[in-house]
Length: 275
Image 1: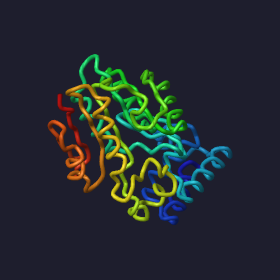
Image 2 (image 1 turned 90 degrees about the vertical axis):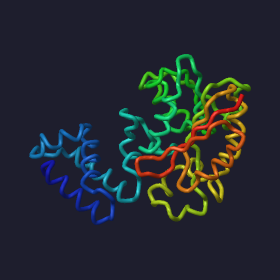
Image 3 (image 1 turned 90 degrees about the horizontal axis):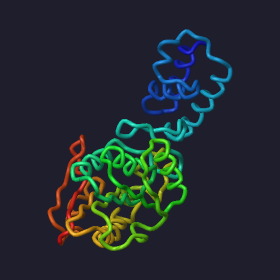
């Protein structure tokens, strides 16, 4: 069986199973099975597929057809131009979160200290450390998530420090210039509306935050005010339709700015702590 034939069979299986983007998914899974980049499949389309390659490809196809996200199969997801290791236990980084990074990079200055609350895979904190040359500390309540984030920091030579704690509870008052977070914000009542691969595979503790999706913000915003220096900046990602609620929760802060993602959906809020 050639690589071309194997791909065609993979596409058909995925398509019949109702998997989105079956051709792209088949490409990614076969490249992963062969430990090659996708361009290899084009240049070697008439090569015979090895027995080991077919066994791995078949297993990955089966996992994807059962709903396992492609990124958890390949253990990788690109974010801000870099490959991050991902696994069950952390959210898969999303493109819209790059907006959060961009807004923080816009306020970073040399010597600033940044706290990334809810590190997850580490994609936000690691990217800020590399792109902004910032001193970054990241916290998470999950030891497993911190292990994955630490692995990404090491592999990308980011030098981020990690602390196991709830929100910013391990840190002293007025110790950071910037607090950034992409916290859980999906309302629990929307659980059944999520794609099955998200609902059934990604960690619920990193997705859901009460009936309105605001539970973490209600705790995080006062905590950020405590650990931020006067004039410090708080940047948060949030979900569809939550912009005005965030404005209300940030009452008493300085300038509050809302930014839309590429789809035109309000996605990030940036606010400053008053002196």
